[in-house]
Image (cartoon, rainbow over all chains, first blue to last red; front, side, top):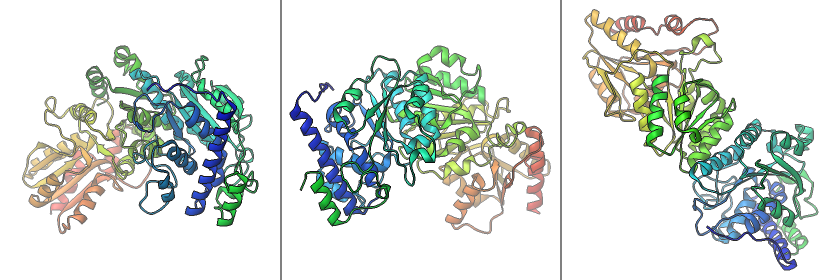
Length: 282
Length: 307
């Protein structure tokens, strides 16, 4: 595939990306309400990362989801499936109407992404700490087969509790997998508590650097900055890249932001209307 | 079995460019030839089995045929969720090869014993479970696994076990038990490295005028229905023999099969390890004697059961 790498050169394009992110958030909130599904705030915190990935960075073609040379995007924080489904549908992998079947009986859109069922879903995730080892395997297989695709894995900060993440981090560094990029959605909360009060992640960026990664901190809601950093993978350092993306859980809706009740709560119909208004979608 | 595995791996590596070898920091010198011939397809993944299994699944999802190898508990229970979710749920064609299964590494203590792995792995959808009976069966099983589009678990003993088959097994089929020697009175179904003890048991039975058929029942999942139907149809006694817990292993699988087939009132014996950890030091032969799994002990119990 030869999809040109794009940059938000113009103000208009940057505005369009912001609108895209707002539309994704609006859709995710609708899905959470319709399904009364959990993990809304976790989904909202990574929307700008997904927007940058799918609309600025990834070399993918929704009409050829199995292209061997496609970039791989693994939603390792599988509990944000609603965000992935909304992005894939808006990108054209399947009809947007299918989002109405989220969590419904007999549908393809389960509360965590399924294996070998839905185009665009690279791996079944939901148990944390699996996406990066899988991604390292994919990246190594690409090296063996002479395929030059890149692998992006989106991890939650709570996911950094898992030992398998750090096993994979050491492995990727030893194998010099410079076509692998981890983005950590560092929203400072995990399911039931502050991340750093649960297991001490800080200093998280230093930890990834100490494990042999080209690690840097980034504003996880700055689509342009995210896109630029992700586009540069591999960046010439010979190391895998870790972007510690500072985010706000529940981002985009004032009454959800940094309120961890929305890890499990689903919005009422009235709250959906209110949220849509705040997102400029009403 | 171990050296046969390494040798067959070299051959398959020459034949199949998809084959990739992942080791959990064991097999010192064992893979030197493979490393020399295929340096880009050998990975020492370190003592990090969860990552190793995930990496293997990721490779298999992109068209390669990884073989993952380390000591049985570490390549099974240590990374069981990665086997279940990354390998089996994705139907990723990973071949998991375990060394030192059952009581083979008895001297290393309970951390290295492996009498629960069949139970765990055969309950996972999409998984095939093979327990080769000797070095030739190891070669055949590894070769057959490369032809599968699904995960395969190969459960080996250690090195230096008696070789039972005369030469390469031409018609090896996953899910099809092999008749090692025929008989008419009792049918001994052996899985994995208990095959030599089973043959010894048959010899002891013969001394007492009892004719035993010996089967190498190498595939525990899927079971060989035809072999089981025939065994329970024709023989006065059927025994399963394994170096694995009686809970969830081969004998348990056959028990489930019997219930589902609505077969009853048959003389059926299960030989395997009890529901216990074994803390005392010693070697495999000591362990088998202690647990009643030596050939002569198996024969004695069968004779007793027939009378």
